[in-house]
Length: 161
Length: 432
Image 1: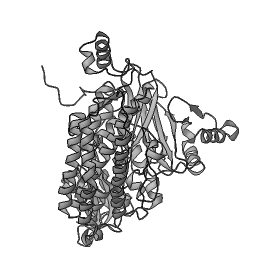
Image 2 (image 1 turned 90 degrees about the vertical axis):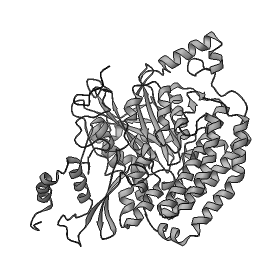
Image 3 (image 1 turned 90 degrees about the horizontal axis):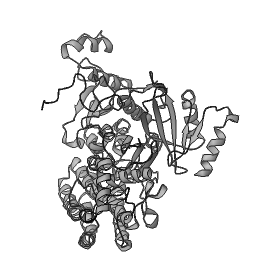
Image 4 (image 1 turned 45 degrees about the vertical axis):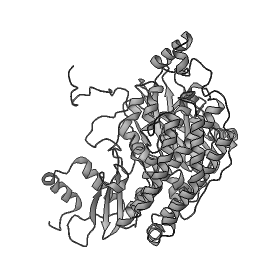
């Protein structure tokens, strides 16, 4: 596990032309933060060279900060090495957009649809970016921090006490 | 309808008269993009769009499928989810870590115990505490009992999907016996909410253990009886063999986990590959198959039940004595008896119930367990005030369902129910 992390670190080092790749220890699995412009390239390297065959999940996070408010965290699993790493991209606050990983892993299809529905992250070049759970006409993205738990404008009013 | 119209023009034209909604239109467009030509002219030799569910008994809950058919064979499928969406991830951000435990019961409602265990393991990673050995052994047994109960429901309902009704009654009788054991163990038959952060709600009594032993003693012959009903049944075999094939590469790329992936020839099991609880100390095998059809998935799950039986036998033998709650008064709920008689415990109980466990701000943790359907994972971020900043649930049914369009290609209408049954979806978990 630690050996593999070292290999990934060497591969994605600055001497190989990768700038802005940060490794963090904040979580109980290796977390690699990558610049969003090179996400697809790095994902392809992880799949082909380090045998991360599966994208198991996408976690979308709303940090509710002024800059780089959204995060898209990719949960990668290697069936060959039996290890897991997380890949993180930070996204713009006003216009959260990132390239879709559907060409790399097919499972990105539904996972990205879910993140789009719940957090409003737009995945560019996604084959079928529909809402996953909510109805198409719905205007909001419920998991954003500025979405209230109840008392939504236009919703059915709560009974008066 | 005039034949000169293109598809787009037809959709535009009929939009007003048939009040086609934006959502429906997008579903129709998604069908088309899937190497499929949908004709809207309405003559008999053209493809037909058929809606199945969400109120269809064979869709195992509220799964809606929009299928395009060429005669009787399926050329495209679009699953529509969200009919059971309750927004658990949003709710979790507004309650303390303990308050969310009952909600995990309602995720995969066929194996609530496994969800409880998976959730508290993730939160314990956040808090950097670990349960006592006895609690860990009991949790291991919980996971396995949940797997057994879930597989028994699956076996019965899947056999019922392809027309064998009796098996359903027989396996449900066995499952009822497990629920009776859970009644003694957790005090509840179904929505157990049995685990606590750093321990368990109740200890496993000797009576419960004896009941479990008595259940296991008669279980294997009963399972054999149910198997004999269908495995030599020509109708069952013909309806399952070679149906719903998915290649190994596709199964991997689509992110499938659990028995569905193992039936495609990938021996992936988190109990062995990324061990948690007491699984490293247990001796069991991971059944796999290579055929990757409905029948292969059936055999993988049936063989898993034998392995679960083996694990439960070993657990009963190895179950140690000792406390069930970690002695960490600031994080773990004290024993109820002591709360009523001791001042210190009363204070701790008050603090944990009212303000919750408080992991450091910004700490993140991911914990996945091998639930009966596949990898069930919880990704938790703490906000430092006793609430999760974000709780992402990685539900196996959701990802397995995304393979439906691939599984359905070239199947017949009658195979649809067999295929849905074989991937064993639970909509409570898929819709969250």
